[in-house]
Amino acid sequence: MKKITTGSLILSLCVLVCVLFINACSKKNETPADPCAGKTIVITATTVNAATGASNGSLTATATGSTGFTYSINNGAFQASGVFPGLAAGAYNITAKDADNCTATKSFTISSIDICLAKNITVNGTAAASDKCSATGSITITAAGSTGFTYSLNNGAFQSSNVFNTLVANSYTLNVKDVDGCVKTSNATVSEMPAGVKFAPVKTILQTNCTFAGCHGGASPQSGINFTIDCTIVSLWDRIKARAVDASPSVMPPAPNAALSASDKQKITDWITAGHKYTD
Image (cartoon, rainbow, N blue to C red; front, side):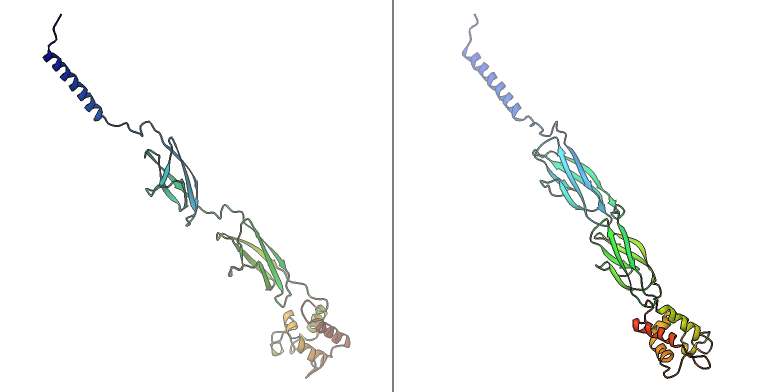
């Protein structure tokens, strides 16, 4: 049996201590495990496109593959929410960071759209006829398919009211504009009301008796007054009464033509009493 000496025992102990020390130092210098190793962070997003020239788009990002996510857009500050509003059209980089500071980045695009093309705005006009010789017509515009409408006639200034009064007989362009500035156009026609039952015989009397040469007709009507024009008759009702009915200061028609009959004078008087308008 081999005898173990004190010296050899001490040597063995020294070797053992050195081995243990070397192992401890080796473990102390090992690189820590990477917390991001094996993770696959995936970013998805829903986008709302922006109107042309506006910053009303948005992006809502969601990350999976880990926990405790915060989000950043275009290298900005991180935030708890993945919602980014108020975006104009363009490309945006979204970065998601988890609780271990592991990150992933993905690009998303906000497109530019013409929001007016997506709207189905309809325009209609309800017209009321006008007296031929005065602006008594009207148009009421109705619109649907959006909100916040203002209204314009013949490309004039927009107004809050959808009713346009004092219109003459004519065709009109109707414009409506909504809260987003989208404009839709239509047309409407104000028709001419028919001549009144009292005006029609007065017109016949005057054009039969007072529109010959030297009176109120022809190429050079007296005083430039032409009774072949309906609205001239309407506008000069007081002169017609004075001359044709009252013979003041002279009679119409002038001599040697015969004065109007009592029946014709009464027709003129009845029309004037009724209001002396084209539609009376």
